[in-house]
Each structure stands twice: as C-alpha cells, then as structure tokens.
Image (cartoon, rainbow, N blue to C red; front, side):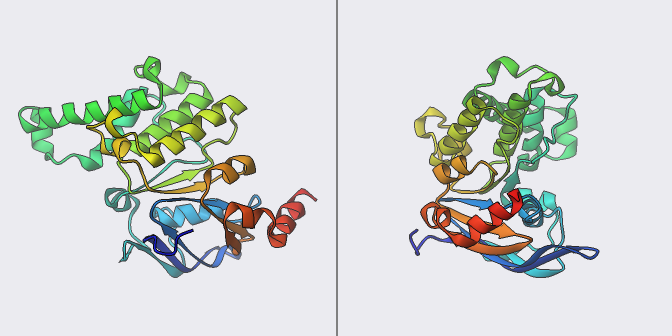
Length: 272
C-alpha cells in the first residue's frame, strides 16, 4: 500500500454502546483514496455498527469521524449523503411498491437543484433537470444489466436482482465513498461473481462507455466492503481491517491477514 494515498475518511477512538453492550471499543482506522478497504470479523464483531456510525444511523458515545478533514461524527444521514457517502444494507432496504427505475430515481433527489415550486409546476429548468437525472438512472440500469426489470415492482424481483437494484440506488447518489454492507449475502456463486464484477468495474470506472454519468465514467475510488465470503474479500480488497468483539485486532494486506494468528483465532473461536 502506498503511504502517499490521501486519507478520505479517518476514525479516531470510536466507541459505541447499547446499554451494557459494547458494540465498538476504541476503534481507529483510516480509509484512503483509490482503495477497496474490507472490514471483516465474526458475527457480532461490530462491522455493521461501524458502517452505521460512518453514515449517521448511530451516534457514538466516544471518538470522532472525519471526512476530507471535516468532522462528521454526529451529522445526519441525509447531510452525509449530500457530502458523498452512500451505502447498501445487509437487509435490503428498497421501496417495495415502486419499480426498479423509481427506486433508483429516488436517490437522485439530493442532487436536484430546482425548488419545490418549480418541481410542482414541472416546466423549464425543472423539466430539463428531471430528464438529465433519468438519463443517469438509465445508464446505471444498463451498467447493472437490469434493463428488462426497469418497470417491474421490486417486491416481485428475485433476491439477487433486488441486491443489484440497491447497489444501483447507492450509485445514483454519485458518492465519493461507497459503503457496501454484505452485498453478496445469501447469493449463489453466479450472483456473487456478477456483484464482484460490478464492484470492480465501478471502482475502476468505465470511461467513454458512460461519458455523461460521472459515477460510472470516473468510478468510485474509495469503497468500504463488509463481507463474510473470504474468497471475495481476498480477491477484491487492497487492505483489510479485522474486528472482533468490537475491537480492531488486525490490519494489513490480504496476504498479511491470511496468515495472522489473531485473525485465525477469531474465526476458529466462532466456529467452536
């Protein structure tokens, strides 16, 4: 890992408790530009709790979070989305009564510049702006290869396709940092391979393929991945953080983590 990579997100001594249960204890780490950072650990290690602190769902009792040097520790989730932090969820959180297209379009509202009155009258700049947003949505649908599902209500879609729609909604926010909470949970091998390919493609950027959609054209150069499939983690991650009982027990490259005795002990301990 190059030491000169810019730190996009810094977490200092973060602690989170629910009553007498300590979900996180003095966790410190940084997320650098141009890397995929994986956070792993046994069930209950605090991985999702950490993501929930980063994007404002949980308010830690101790510690600070900085994004591009700005303190964001207790900022609201909608404000963090406007800053450029988006996520997918371990349990799918879509608008089940809406279509695939409308679910992805819903994420674009934080990027709309026209006021309520202009939107209600729907003329001039408001009309032009919606057309531009819908073009972006169509590019995302094309990128995720879900064109046949664009008008279908998401409640009737197969599980793997709903996962794709949720990824599409996160991409529609045009984030600078993308948080992926177990994006492959419950999937078969083929579905996992598809999602892994999409993650790599969006990280690297698609260049001239989507010239008018910056999130696809330029890519997202800072991705935080929580995932239990160690094969996927080892293939995708540039760097890995390991949590156990809410504490950081290891950090390093995939090769370093693979042979770390503390990591091996944590996973073996879960199995026994």
